[in-house]
Amino acid sequence: MKMRLPDDLQAVDGEVIPKSRKVFFGMFAACVAMALFGVFLTIGRWSEGSVSITGIAFVVIGTCAAPFALYHTLFTKTVLVIGRDRIQIGKGLHRIHTEIPYSNIRSVEVVRGDGPQRVAIVLLDMSDPDTVCPGGALAFNRNRQRFACDLPLQWFAKAPKVIHKMIREYWQPPDKNDPRLRRLG
Image (cartoon, rainbow, N blue to C red; front, side, top):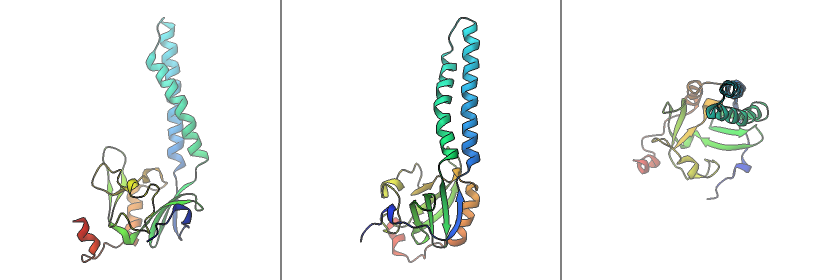
């Protein structure tokens, strides 16, 4: 059975959810504010005859991170496609790099761990040829909890709870007699 490559993927018909530009613009504004705070902290300490290492750190971090946030705000076109039979993530509709068919999903949950809310997906078969993720099965194993695939959906224009609800409209839990369930335990 030949594994599909991300280059072979085509966007399916479905709801297209773009990346939230507000989130990245907010990150850019926070970085600029951090750099300005560092400048004022450094100037304040300098006027007293000392150096503020904390202020310099704020300036360096804010100044280095701001272009990254601005670049993502203006130039990246990441989209999530919720189709009738699969979920896709890509750099625009012409460069799909992740594809998870609903037939290979064991469960879908909204979870909140030590970070922002996310949609966690447990796969039935990590070696399914129709499931494509850069890095293969290793990309699905980077979990900190019991989930096989954590989608970084907090960066999209709709909340993870809304995206979860949209996925649940199309996804059906697997049949209890599915042999792939027995392998998972």
